View 1 (cartoon, rainbow, N blue to C red):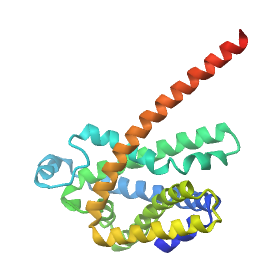
View 2 (view 1 turned 180 degrees about the vertical axis):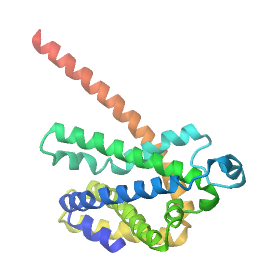
View 3 (view 1 turned 30 degrees about the vertical axis):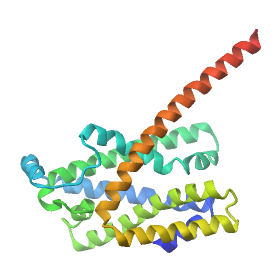
View 4 (view 1 turned 90 degrees about the vertical axis):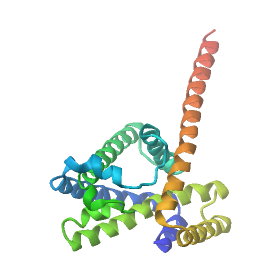
Length: 240
């Protein structure tokens, strides 16, 4: 997967956009299908008691802070790539539709999967990859297929982040500096994945990224308000 990510980011934005555009709909559709099927096997009667017995890592001290951190994490993950991707859209209407459809589809899938996990806690337990356990409820073949989906999910997350980071260091996607950055970043990521357990990495990275994303979100909102006010002042001044 590391090699695939390197190749994708190596060839720049157009390749990245094409690959993610092909993979993401399939990945989301399969996730929703498995989540819906798992809901038919769900038993919510023992959810509360099962949760008390599990010792799970927490990204935040309270559920509502965790609820804020997750979308902030998602925003921060794709912020480096989305502006450049949006610039390739033919018009604002297409961009708006894509954003609305993507957000709606994503949160629908998320809600279905979360409900399926809560309804099957006895099976999922404290698994580091609960969605994989949900897929295993049906057959080994479905579980294997979902393993592929998980790899694709990691891939579609890693590529925009790597592209955004390397793009800040080197603007020219064909330069040696840009490609050295890709290789170095991938090597560091692989070393970290071997040194630390998956649950530890995810809990740390999601938490930190969520807090940083929250700060960035507030900054973006303030910046947008200030920019609009300046624009109105300039228009008023020009009329005078």
